[in-house]
Image (cartoon, rainbow, N blue to C red):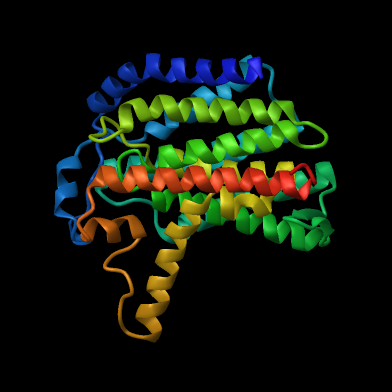
Length: 323
């Protein structure tokens, strides 16, 4: 536990120390966020020009500290591979947005995510011979190799995009991810057999996110961008796969599920019924339209995310017969 806490504090301190210089570099290079005018959220226009691509620094710190602390093994290698692979995609998207006002095309983005997801899934399956998942309250259930790979790819892509959709308000994605990563840190520590290095990486990621929140809480001095949201989302899903408890993701990542679900429901409603259920999606914008302050939405979503994380850990313990 001492090593876990030390990793978290070290990651926080590194981000807090390096971020001011990184901010100056982004401002000097002109990496400012472009805000779309067609969203109907005029008060967000004041965020125009806020430095973006903050997630790239977080990814670099996590990987550097994981190597420094000798926390890279077969399990964490897959997590860091997903973090770096999808994070670089997000960084390129952030760069395009800052330069042109547009990002990567949806087709290119999903193709890249699919490639990284398939590589990660096949690596995990071949290295660990995964062919089963732990079903909450039931235990380990064999599903076969191909279904496991399909589940893995689906989890990585959906979680990556879910976190990305959540990254729409100051501090929202960063704060909710802290609780998700801390929850999987506990799962990794108590898993049988224990996965200490996975817990260390979870702690490092939670630490860099807390450090990032120091600069990202409203009014944000820097935006995480796709470099962080896409990368950390993909890595979170891989962590669920590595621990064998990927089916806890809907609980531990409840906010990401709700945000994604709101978009899906909205699109289905418009196509089938010809009307909208929400005033705007992702759902945090719906609450903005209802008159909630940005900080209210963020803090309330944090609370829900924390509760989801606790529920996920309790289900993990109940499945193991420890509660």
